[in-house]
Image 1 (tube, rainbow, N blue to C red):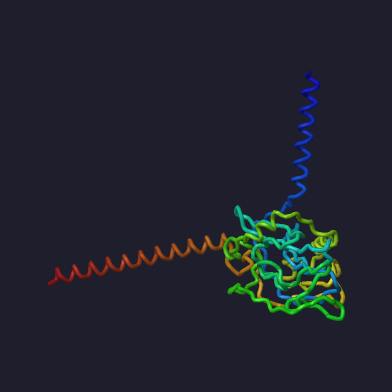
Image 2: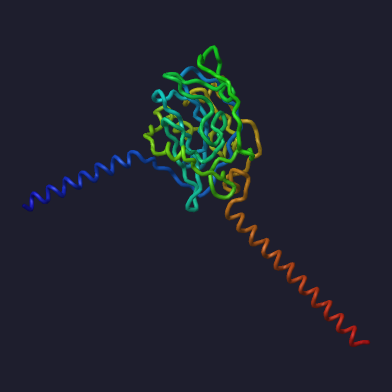
Length: 297
């Protein structure tokens, strides 16, 4: 009887471990950083290499030497009908947390970040699946109609009144966004992890010292490329020079860091206290002068 009970317990434990492993396989583990990512670089999109490629916008990622830029690139979809939801940095619990991107039948929440080229912060306006073919919107996607055969032209209206290059969601200076009901529904759908080429592209970016934010000061020479991992040649696009400050001192939006804000607040309080003390001293001096005048008369 004891052996039967032990066997049942072992089978139950094995079942729990199996379920736990399956559940963990569905969860993408992100990373957390105490320093906000730099602003998104400004760059042009390289031409789409051909039918079936979907644009993966560039993003800042974290490595042993700090933030590095993963260039935007065109990637073949892992299967017909899936779209790419970009990853994003979100503020929470006193740190910036990376939420990995994924493939799925619908676009999910990506922090409200305006990555451009159809990723305006909500959804994707760069194209859609029609039957077994992807159709590209020439208004926001760089496509050569002699190479890409399924296209349309529809102006994309960006309802974000504040145009900026903020690369994180939430927190001081971050994009204020919440998941829409459609994005919440998309989050519950079955997802596909980044393709092997995407993972290799990210690793190659991390190994390229020129892509470190500390080296390129937020303006990477390789801002985008037509194909994953291809960092040289005529299809590589560099970022345009824009003002940038070290992420160690400033956040992506140019706002002061939390520590810097606290120091500024303390200094403001000290200045206010000194002004009050000066006003009180002046009032006291005036009162003494008036009293002395009355005594003389």
